[in-house]
Length: 293
Ligand SMILES: [Fe+2]
Image 1: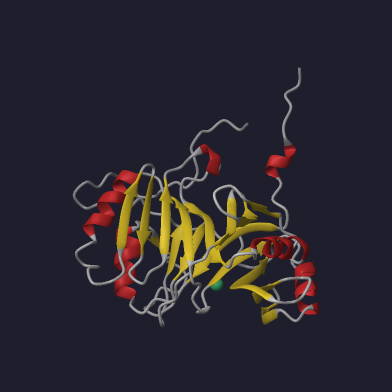
Image 2: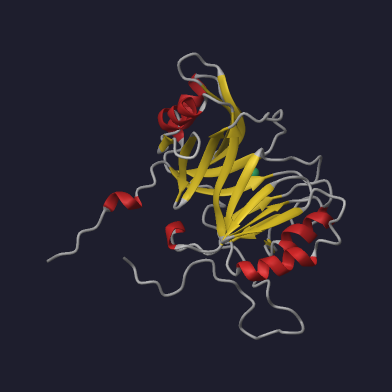
């Protein structure tokens, strides 16, 4: 008998990938200590290699860190990282030098919660089949949102952006927006105060690039026209009354953007001069040899 496949499992709707988050950092040296030495990410050697900005490669995803007044995403970014035990040692090793900042980490069962020197929160998970074949990469960006806004936010992403989005109500109320292969943008309702928007952004690639642009333009929400392949918007609104539900800058790129699918270098952070092993300097970011289902 022929095997049956659930073809819907592979549908990703209009959001093809969540590639980067962007937060300003006031000190590139401390950012290097945290993101390169502590987290074990790889600085992009090709793009912005100077002292004014730094792009951190995490598998096929990135965190961009231009110099400036610190920005904090109100919520948490979920990241898959192989070898959680080694991450634990690296985080301990940079503790002394990051003393006096917001730097913190907490080891849980199968996860490590980390706070960067300026307050950005990262939850790190070991690879798991439920995350797909990815062993290194941004899995989700979770944002705190106001009570009563999740339904409207999901509707906005469905109708304006052509995304697959819905509201889940188990363990709190949250809008889940499918942002790529095993990737999500999550808006979690909370009673805690949401700070004033500070200019941070996320970047996504869209398959249908023009229809959301036309829909956003019609309701006056396009905030920047960057170039042929990229535009931005900030406000997510209630489509019935136009009221703002949440502010998050989105850098929207087409799949024809020159940077789409660019190969990224990922090093193996376990390599040191004292334990160097030839041929082990690159880190794979997908599970090896898994039989295709
Ligand atoms: Fe960006």
